[in-house]
Every structure is written in C-alpha cells, then in structure tokens.
Length: 333
Image 1 (cartoon, rainbow, N blue to C red):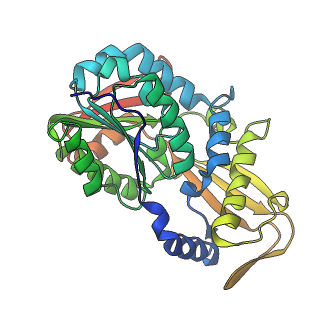
Image 2 (image 1 turned 135 degrees about the vertical axis):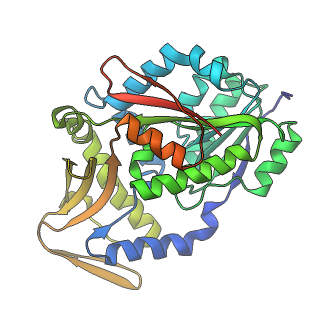
C-alpha cells in the first residue's frame, strides 16, 4: 500500500477566496465589538511564534498532551486500526502526528492547515524522514467547512487507500477555539470525514480541561511576552490580507479566564484613540476599545464526551495526565 514518494503532494483550496477573506475581516472590524478570527494568527511568522509559545514553561497544553501521547501511544494503537489514513487538522509543523507514525502505522498522511507555506516546508522535511509514507498537504480553512475535496479522495485512491479507515487527528485543544455550537458542527463534519473511509475509523482529539485561573491564565499571558507578540502579529497579517494600517505597538495584549463561559479570552486593546483604515473602509477605536481575537474553551471530560456522542460518534475512550489537566479522546465513528 505504501509507495516511495519523492515529495508530498499539495492541494491548495483557500487562496482562491481572497475576496471572501477580505470581506470576513472587514465585517469583523466593523462589528460591535470588533473581532478577528483566530485562524488569522497563522501566517508563516504566526506559526513560528506559536511554536515558540509551546516551549514556554507557562504553556502547559502542548507539554501535557505530548506526555499523554508518549505514555499511551500503544493503548491508542489498540483503538486506531493499522493502515488507516491519518487526517491531521491544523497540522502546523506536523510534529505531533509524526510522533505517532510508528505506533499507528498509517497507510497515508493527509495534513490540513490554513498556513500553506509553513505546511509545505514542514511536510518537505517530514517526507525525507518517511520516504515511503504517502503524504498529502491540504491548504484548507476547515473552520469554515471540513470535508476532503474530490481531488484528495482521488489522490487516496491512487495510493491504494480509498477504502482505508480514516482517523481524524485534532490535537492541541484547538477545538477550544470554537464555542460549543460551533464545536458540535465541526465534530459532525469530522464524523462525516471518518465515515467516508472503511470501517474502524474515528477521531483522536486533544481537549484542554477546566482548571484554576492561576494555572490557565499565565499560559495565555506569559512574562516573556511571546503570546503578546503572537496576538499582535495578527494585526500585521490583517494588514497583509486586507490592506489595513494597524500599528501593532499601539495595541496591548489582554488575556483572562472568563469563568462564567469556561473560556480564555484574548483581546487587543487600543492604546489611545485611533482610526484604522483599509481600502474601502475604516474603523475608529476609542482609547481602551478592544478587538476580540480568540476564545479557548476549557471542558469537563463528561461534557466533551456528551458532545462527541451528539456529533454521532460511539462510546469514547479517554486518557489523561496525573493532574487531570488535559484529555485525549478516541471516539469511534
């Protein structure tokens, strides 16, 4: 089933919708309150800044999840059928999926990310280390719609993997960027992707859990200011995409845990009154006014298990760390 491959194959979908991206950004800046979706964090620099965040002592999710994967890889391999197609959502550097290749023995690897240039570089290096594993990069904004395009299914067929089970892999607790209704919609789409393959597929997903503010807040507002730089870089990316004239130095990073909604919120706060302009529009910001850039919902395991079942998955298997800070679920399709 594996064929030697010189380089990963790429299918790029989202760049054709530049007008839609500009319209989405402009609508968010005109809204009350203003907001920009967290997917716009991830240009090439934003992706690298996020990699730096994962190295911070305060940022527990990546480290804690990695320890769960390391400790439970063999148990996960008992659930995920060998020879599955591994569909990695928000793949980034591809490092988390690559760490499971030996345990899961996938037939093919499909990496999905909005940051195509970063993904292309990461997959080029990964293919050199795993030359016989067929790899497909998908430039796709799955926050809008998650589905494998016909070209991806054709590619899988060409690798002899059309009828293989599909394991959707969504690590890193990025499901927390979606409110519960949005998360349910995405999980239903993930279930449909799994159902498009052979029997035995399912979802392997990392979920951050509710914990004290003293633990969770510094993870999103570190003393070094790396998360602040990551947040402000969204303004530079917006400048590139929409033609805005944001000056990042005039915006302050704000992050706090909203206990009522069980979520971290990240905002950028205007330092002084200012007007932001772009072709065809502008927005006046008062001193202290904020642009909402991210939510990161934290879940109780029983509530997330109920969400998985509502999305159509079967009885989940669940692994956690000794402190109960993070969970990884396997949910059969």
